[in-house]
Image 1 (cartoon, helix red, strand yellow):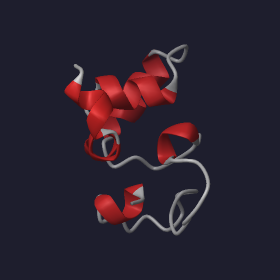
Image 2 (image 1 turned 180 degrees about the vertical axis):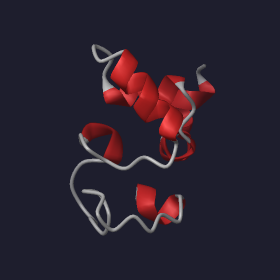
Image 3 (image 1 turned 90 degrees about the vertical axis):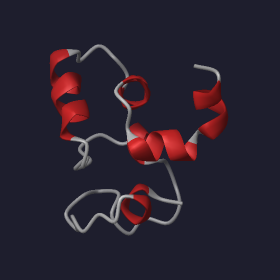
Image 4 (image 1 turned 60 degrees about the horizontal axis):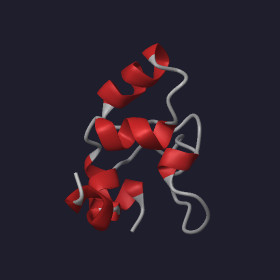
Amino acid sequence: MRCYDYLKCSQTECPMYGKEGGPQCWDVDGTLCLHHVIEEVRQELSDMEKKETCRLWGCLYYKAANPKQNSNE
């Protein structure tokens, strides 16, 4: 499962769009996240890792792709 499939994203200019292998979106800078709150928070809390921002601020794709991690919260 990839972010663009799960979120039904059509932002072809995103560096993750159409990528089948490799890192997930939370490991790639410059993605065009559909959950814009996460990108706004990342700008304010630039010392926080992107993955942690996605987890803490409720990215739907992050939660779907990491069900075991989310069950411990």
